[in-house]
Length: 295
Ligand SMILES: NC(=O)c1ccc[n+]([C@@H]2O[C@H](COP(=O)([O-])OP(=O)(O)OC[C@H]3O[C@@H](n4cnc5c(N)ncnc54)[C@H](OP(=O)(O)O)[C@@H]3O)[C@@H](O)[C@H]2O)c1
Image 1: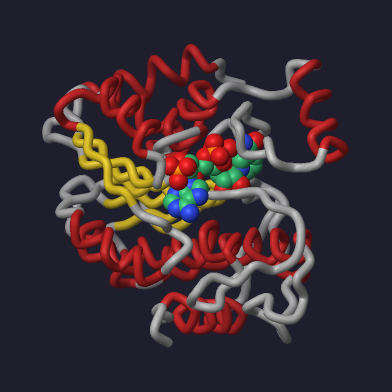
Image 2 (image 1 turned 60 degrees about the horizontal axis):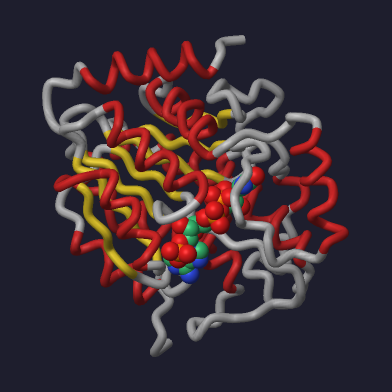
């Protein structure tokens, strides 16, 4: 197994030798894993244009100070499809799109103004809308577009999808929701990566491992406890280390779709799903991403 030092050196060698400026967009780039990835691209590839998207302006300014003049921040609430449609026109080139926006909140469904579960809106539907809106730019990328969904590619299982409640309107359990969007993310990268018109774009769904970020800070103590044990036994990593493995996974994916693990390597114990399932989830997803505040 390659060490983080080897992976970092390899990422640096590849990214620093690119012949044209790279355009990277990191949604959720103000904190945690996304921040780590944005900064790693900035370090390895000083000519890269790195755009971060999020809400926290103070955190964004701290990232921009490290990125230098090629860094850019776009502020927006990515739980709303209507807001995402206002963000994407501000982006005029993208080779790498990283989708790392997320929240962890227990408790019942809390619908957005567009009547979508807020957690699913942020961690799945809004991510897909970013892809839909930015696909023309990704397809036009001279080096081939790359899209990385950071959620959980190891534990998503299509057999756990509730086909009678795809939009999580009746079953409001936190766990059901998480399982559903993990499985949807697997199916969506497969769907998008199988479309002939996306031949110049690779779609990846990643499990980042246990990464020391503040995402779980608001969870009850008994949920945070196992995470603390992980930390104690050195089973977690920093966002900077995670970022190197995620970039390794991006650089190692040429075309099509791929599920990667916390080391940026292929998840080997999963098979693709059948076309009917992919189509059903895709059609449902398009219905949800087409929502607006007014609808
Ligand atoms: N950390 C882990 O161990 C772990 C493990 C497995 C999976 N994951 C997944 O990896 C992803 C990233 O996790 P993380 O640990 O890096 O989380 P994090 O440190 O809390 O960062 C979350 C990012 O999402 C953005 N965000 C949250 N709500 C937003 C909103 N309404 N609109 C726009 N941006 C919003 C935040 O930016 P603002 O605050 O600026 O809005 C921040 O940049 C999540 O999907 C998480 O479920 C994490």
